[in-house]
Length: 144
Image (tube, rainbow, N blue to C red; front, top):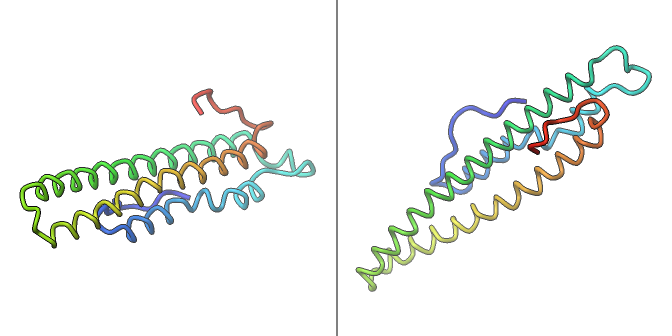
């Protein structure tokens, strides 16, 4: 369940959102992953649940960190574009095309900022499921 290769494009919001959707696969499949890798009481001796939980914990941490970094990077890039367009707009108040571009970028910025909220919900859900199934097998470091 590794993150996809390549970099997210901040230019096209639909492409950006699709990239995040693919990167969220680990979170979408966490219940299935835990059901297939964490043993029930009858199979407890055949699988090392603590190692499995540790690996899943690290995968989740890596995925969450990389997605947050990508989202914040795109927010910063888009904020910079909005700032530049605002400055240009101050110089030429009558430029309708510039105003249209500014509004488009502002909308994209708001949508990207809302992805941080989506990310928080996705992460909270994953950690809840992880903790329910792995708490007796693996104790993560206190940084979570």
